[in-house]
Amino acid sequence: MEPRSIRVKEVGPRDGLQNEAVFVDTNDKIAWINQLSSTGLSYIEITSFVHPKWIPALADAVRVAQGIERVPGVTYAALVPNARGLERALAANVDEVSIFLSASEAHNRSNINKTIQETLPVLGETAHDALAAGKSVRGYVSTVFGCPYEGKVPVENVIRVTEALFEMGVSEVSLGDTIGVANPRQVQEVLEVLLGRFEAKRLAMHFHDTRGMAMANVLTSLAMGMTTFDSSIGGLGGCPYAPGASGNLATDDLLYMLDGMGMKTGIDTEKLREAACFIQEKIGRPLPSHNMQVCQA
Amino acid sequence: MEPRSIRVKEVGPRDGLQNEAVFVDTNDKIAWINQLSSTGLSYIEITSFVHPKWIPALADAVRVAQGIERVPGVTYAALVPNARGLERALAANVDEVSIFLSASEAHNRSNINKTIQETLPVLGETAHDALAAGKSVRGYVSTVFGCPYEGKVPVENVIRVTEALFEMGVSEVSLGDTIGVANPRQVQEVLEVLLGRFEAKRLAMHFHDTRGMAMANVLTSLAMGMTTFDSSIGGLGGCPYAPGASGNLATDDLLYMLDGMGMKTGIDTEKLREAACFIQEKIGRPLPSHNMQVCQA
Image (cartoon, rainbow over all chains, first blue to last red; front, top):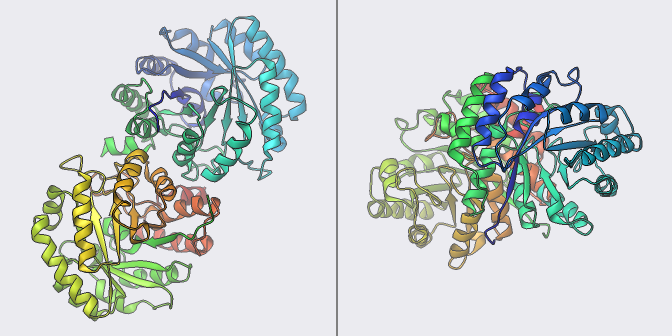
C-alpha cells in the first residue's frame, strides 16, 4: 500500500463527551481542547449546538467555543441541528458546522422527531445560512450499515440522503456505522456502490466499535481509497444503544495502525496520549481504548 | 472474497484460563469444556501440562482431560513443554499435543529458561514420542511480530524455528503475536515471506488484541489465504506483559466478522455465548469481548 496522508477527525469533545455520564467542567473542556489543538490534529469537533435539554453534557457549547484557543491550521467544527442552533454556532464563531440525519426512517424519527423528507428542508436552510456566513458545512449520515429499529438499511437510502446533502453544499459526508454492526464485506460492498457515485475524497468513515469491527472496517475502507476517518480519543463515549458496550473508534488505536502501516497523519501520539490522560481523569473512569489500557499497565 | 471454510481453534481453557487470576474449579472447567464441545467447535485446547508450579491455574490438567466428554469430530489438544509433561498428557489421552518456543532468544530464555538451540532437541524428543504414541503435534511460535525484550524480530528467526518444527513432524505451526504489536502491513510482509516457504494450510494465526489490532490482522491474514485462527471465548485471558490490558482475540468477536463475511465455521454462536456466560460467572469478572459487552447491555 502506498504511503498516504490520512486525515483523522477528532470527535471526542462532541461524540465522546455526548455519551459520557459525567458533566465535564467547562474550563476542563477548554483546557482539554487546547491540548488537542497542539497534537497535530487538523480537525476537532468541539461541541454540539443541539438544544441543551437533549444533550446536557454539552450545555456549555457557546462558552467552550468562545473559550478555546484557535490554533491556525486547525478546523474547529460543531454539530448543528437547525437554524436556531446555527445562530449560536455563528455567534461562537466555529469554522465548520455539521448537519445530520439518518439513512433509515425509524432512526431519523427517533433521533430528530421528523421524517427524512421533513428533515431535508431544515438541513437545507441551515446549510444555506452557514455557507452564506462563510462557514463550511459537513454532513453526517447515521445508520449507513444498519439501524437499531429497522435492521438492514438499503444502500439506496444512503445514496439518496448523501446526494441531498451534497446538493445543499456540504463539502464532505461522514458515513456512520451508528450501532457498530458493519463487517468488512459489507463495508466493501457499500463503498463499491457509493464510490460509483461520489468521490472518495468527499466521503469520511465514522465507525463504531460496538462489535469489535471498527479497525477491520477502517482497513477495508483504506483499501477502497478512503482517506478521512472520524475517531474519539481513548475511545471516549460509550454506545447509547447498548449501555456498557463500546462505542467510538479510539483515535489512539487508529493511529497505532496508521502509523504502523506507514501512513502520514501529522499527529504526535505522545501529545495525544497526554490529552487522553487529562480527560480520563476528568471523566473519572478509565478510557477504554486498547492503547490507553497498555499505557496504564 | 469467496465463501471459505475457516477453522477456529478455541484456546480459552488453556491460553485464556492461564492468564486469569481466579482458579476455576475442576468440575466447572469440565462442565464448561463440555459446553464448548457442543458448539460446533472442532478444536479445543483444554489445558497445559507445563508444571503446575508455573501455571497453577491449570494444575488440574490431568483431572480435566480425564473428566471431559470426548465428542466425536472434536480434537482435544493440550500444551506440553517436554517429555515429562508428555507422559501426563498421554496418560490423560489427549488427541494432540502442542509444543512451543519463541522466535526471539530473549523471550525464549525468559519463558523456557533455555536458548532456542537448547530448546529444539527437547521439542524434537517430545514430538517424536507423541507421534510414536499416535498423537498429532502442533507447534507454537511466540513473538513472531515483536518481542517484549528485543523489539523487532527478524523474519529469518521465524523461518528457522518454523522449519525446525516441521522437521520434527508437527502438522501445523501457530504464529503468535504474543504482545499484540503487529499491524496489518507487517502481517502482510511477514506472511508474504513465510508463504514463499510454507503452505498456508500448515500455518495458523494466533493474534493478541493488546493494541486493538487483532481483527484487522485477521482480515489481512484472510486476504493472504490463511484459514486457521486461534481465539479465546469472550476474550478470556489478559495480557501477561501488561496487566489490565487486553490479550487474546475473542472467539465471539472473530465469529461476528467471519459470519458477517459469509465464511463457514460450523460454530453455533448462540451456544458459544451460553458457554461464555457460564465461564464469565466462574471467573467473577465481565468477559472483555465486544460482543459479550453488547449482550450484557
